[in-house]
Length: 66
Image (cartoon, helix red, strand yellow):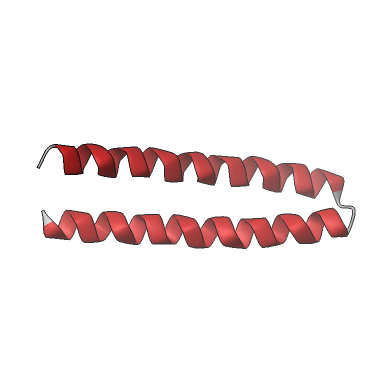
């Protein structure tokens, strides 16, 4: 059980790191007026944020089952 929680925390931390990187890339693309690249990055960022939300929901359900 503890290992599962550690894995979940690691997964969340990895998603947060990826989101931070993607936000930086998006900012650079927007400042450079790279419209198509910015759109792609926005989609990727949205997907990562959704994954983070899904992961948080799973963690909450796991905690509630204890």
